[in-house]
Length: 198
Image 1 (cartoon, helix red, strand yellow):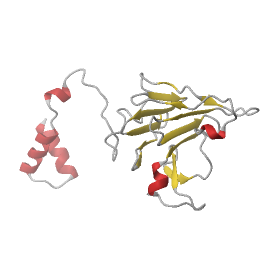
Image 2 (cartoon, helix red, strand yellow):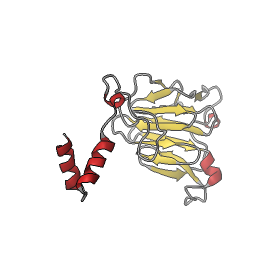
Image 3 (cartoon, helix red, strand yellow):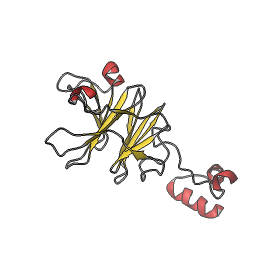
Image 4 (cartoon, helix red, strand yellow):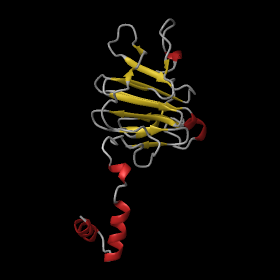
C-alpha cells in the first residue's frame, strides 16, 4: 500500500523518498476514523469550517418543512419564509420558474463589506442559487411588513433546526446559517461577518 501511495505522490509532485514516506504517514487514517459506523458527514465546506455537516447533499433526515408559506391574493406563487432567533438572517424561497432562494444578512448593511450596489444601497441579500450578494432597497419577503394584515407571521426557526421547501434546505445554528439546493448541491454558508458560496 505504501508503494502505491508513494508512486501517486511522486507523480503529482517532485518529492524525495523520505518526503513521500512522511506524507503517507500523515494521510493514514487513525483507527477511529476508519472504524465501521463512523460515517458521520464532515462539518463544513471549503472556506467555511462551521457549515452544516452534509451541506450540499440530500435533504437531511432530521429536516422538517418550513412552517410559514405565504402568497398574495390572486397569485399562484407561494413563498416559504423564515428568520433566525437573532433576526440577523432571514430567508425567502419559491419554486416557480425561475426559482428564488435568497437570504438577507442585515449585519452586511451596517458593515458594507460587500460594497455598495448601483442603487446606492449596501449589498446584503445573498443569492444562494447564483453565488453572489446583491443590494435590495425594499423590505424582504420574510418581513411581515410586506404582507397584508392578518397574514401568518414569519416563522422563527430555532438554533439547531433544519428546514426545507422543495429541494431547498437551510440549517440554522448559532454560528450561522447553511442553505443549499439539494438537487444541484449549490449553496451558501452565511454568518454575521461573511458568506462563503459552495
